[in-house]
Structures are given as C-alpha cells and as structure tokens.
Length: 86
Image 1 (cartoon, rainbow, N blue to C red):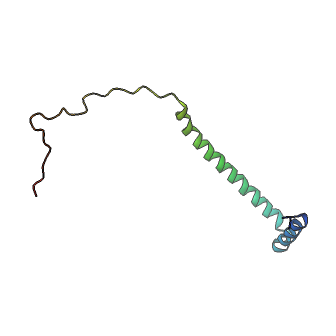
Image 2 (image 1 turned 120 degrees about the horizontal axis):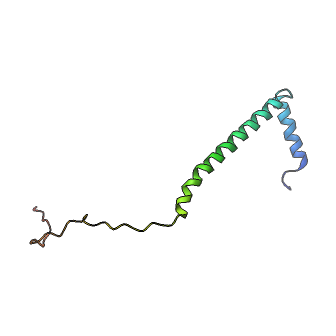
Image 3 (image 1 turned 60 degrees about the horizontal axis):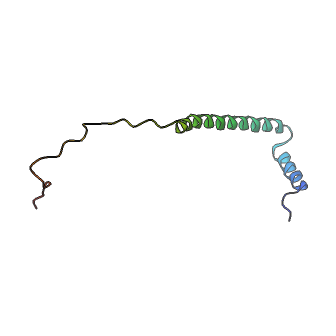
C-alpha cells in the first residue's frame, strides 16, 4: 500500500459527482472558493491585529522613574508587632 494513487482520486470524484449531481457541482465549487477567501481574509486580519502588539517589545526600555514618599516611616517606640489575644 503506497498511499493515495491516481485512481483513488478518480473514485472520489465519481462519488462526489453521484452525490451532488453535475448541475450542482459549479455552485458547490463556487461556495468552497468563497469560503476559502473568507477564511484567508480572517486569518490575515488576525495576523495584522497581532503585529502591532509585538512592536513595543522591540522598543528600548525607558529609564525607571524614582518614586519617593510612598512608604510610611517606621513607627517609633514600639518594636513589637500587633499581638492577638486568644
């Protein structure tokens, strides 16, 4: 068994012809083509959406800004933390 051969393709095409009939084949092919075009368009749109998200990663990082005064000074007098009475 060497996989698919030429006569396999002929048998598949004959089965499709019997199932759908000669009159419906052009409409079926047109529908498959339109579906493929829509799928390609959606895939391209998804790639374009992902593209700009990657560009900021290539930019140079900015220098960190120093933030002062956000931490409260340590409490004076009491060196023990809160205790729980059980």
